[in-house]
Image (tube, rainbow, N blue to C red; front, side):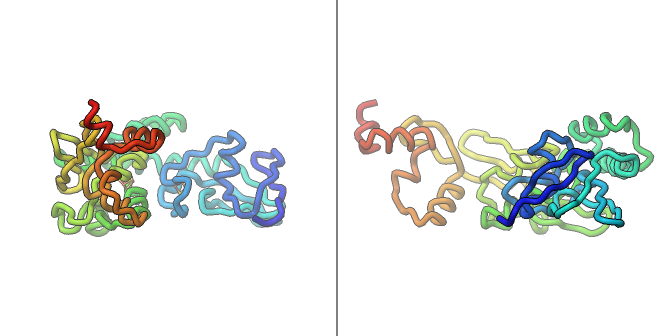
Length: 264
Ligand code: SF4
Ligand code: FES
């Protein structure tokens, strides 16, 4: 981390570290900037464009995404100018057309007084992503960050979608569900039915759920448990068969899983 610098956001002086992004600094100081494709811990990608801000540096002014912009000495940032607001309004109209069922898009749009779109809405009755996807790519990036490539962009232009290759059930998906957790528009559908996890949005990829040998709860997919333990270099069979709660209890009491099992 380099020496801190002073920047101005909305005319307020703020001390920040040059390795921080404008978006992060703004968030830390309670300045609201819409940011749908940003996730702490993942490299920013600048996909949704909603986090646009106006930047003044010396004599130059520009509009850029705050999630990808690192703070610099004497930088001035304005988060809600008319120009920024107009850009966001257009983007929100596009998203209202692209993802007409997304509540978060409607909510943000409403804040900007946008309730209708001039673009034609694309409603697909069988859309695996429930007509909520804005193609921000966060699900793909988080999947890759888990060391898996189960989903990707497929198709081109206005036919671009996110799904498994050839719309076939994925051989690589571990069913971890991270994609659904990070999706800003709650587009991804996953259901646990009996002993199976079904990744409905991902070509109905099916995975077997693992049952905890102590409490009997179905806690994760077998593939995900194997994947995590393999990456952690663990081969302990007991670890594979315990849910996180029982695993904690098991290690904190320092007794064997088998003896607990027998007592119950
Ligand atoms: S499914 Fe969600 S996370 Fe993935 S691209 Fe669409 S909106 Fe983004
Ligand atoms: S959060 Fe910056 S572009 Fe999406």
